[in-house]
Image: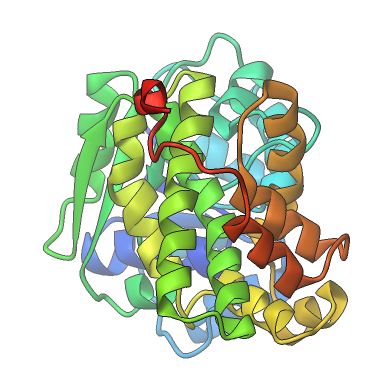
Amino acid sequence: MSYKYPVGVLGAGAWGTALAEHLAGACGHNVLLWSYDKKAAADIKKKRKNSIFLPGYPLSEKIDVTTTPEDVAKNCKVILYASPVPHCAEMAAMLAPILKEDQTVVISSKGFRESDGAILTDVWQDMMPHFHNLAVLSGPTFAHEVAGHKPALATLAASRKEVLKEVDKLFNSSLMRLYFTHDLIGVQVGAAMKNVIAIGAGISDGLGMGENFKAGVLCRGIVEMMRYSHSLGGERLTLSGLSGVGDLMLSSHEGSRNYRFGRYLGEGMTAKEAFEKVGSTVEGANTAAILTVQGASKGIDMGVVMAVNGVIHGDIDASRTFRLLLERPRVVEFDIDEDLI
């Protein structure tokens, strides 16, 4: 089947708009971008900018806009999902009757389903059990830098080689290098969990705990990411790559809203005040709650995640929570060395 557009993007927030601009402006493709916000759609059409969600970046004439998601499903060969995680199941259910076997869906959002902690590819698979061309794109990629055509590296995960090749061909430019993996689980766990650990880094800085302690929080957070990924069937090594350590490095300083949210908490703000101060979605806050429940049910030791969640919900004072991390029982550094003690 022939399609009007080689690629479409579901979601015209900052990240979705940046992806559309990269694919159109850097890669030269005609792109169909869906926006739920009619004002943003009109802004892009008339002024070639998204002043609501990604102000300050001109957008390519090759980007067309629609306010009907079905248009993307009917007219695009490859579809990138870049909408908020809570809408993932609804969108998949809506598009399931439309999508054909030769199309590909690339998950570009980061998080878990709230009800059961499912990764997003599983959410799509639940709605479309016979659809197998799923991929995940993740890595250290701030939207404003991608939209500004600064170079980046990212991880592309898919179970099928032909899907990896198809998506890589679309992204082929001098500005973005993709690395391949078949570990869909590990890539998605890293993408979602790094937001929680970044909040932890922000809390540490807000408390004035110092660079030594923050580095320790980040490192132990990576171990927790590896544990959780392994419990779901993912590979630990994946979390040492771009979608794990790489993304966490990017998200653990002032440019990240998750980090800023955590710093505000460490400085003494309530979660409500911190949310208002950040002024945009803080994905890690909801993810921390999901992981706390799922980790406990699976018997996984995730002290950093639980500490972050406790501070967000006001269950315990931030300073006391993070000092308790220092007072936990001594353990081996890695689970594979458990016979040392």
